[in-house]
Image 1: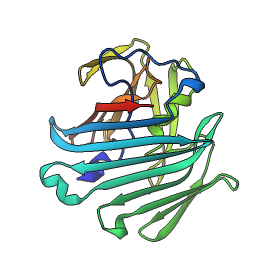
Image 2: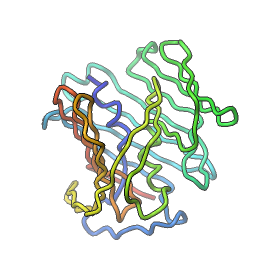
Image 3: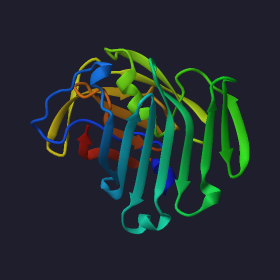
Length: 241
């Protein structure tokens, strides 16, 4: 069942802990150095999992850790841990290593190394190496939501996201709706930009809502698979330093 949230886990972080929070400045100097957040995941409206996320910057490097714990019967699958580490550059996050681990089953671990010098992405899946061309801006499941902080503003029009899941390299197309939408999370109202994928008839769809006044990091992610199963991840607690 945790496969259903492999791309929901990339939405974690952001905003403010109370309705009194003031919008953050959008300069790099004012960007957070540390973020701790808790997210709630529901499946078809029912409790499914919680995500504890931590993002930290140390000098010119960053590290992300995301821990997903199932609720009820889903807890039997064990914790799902995503980690990403790499450099901070003028263009934002530049991952060097990504890991996905599910419970105590080492066979399910996914290990990814970014060889920027050789423009080569190396993904180790069940002990077997898979390679793909590495292009500028490529992110992983854990680093993805933080990269919006570094994108040129204002965000508008269409964007393309290149993302590794640890098993393969995908490109995602999104259109940014011009009209802001309000999302209420844990009693806080956020003015958001809604990122909508192209119409799809058979594949799963994913939508993101980015907080315009809080570094354009996702407040909410909605995923609907090709069977109509709906998963939603939304912020419930946050601490920013």
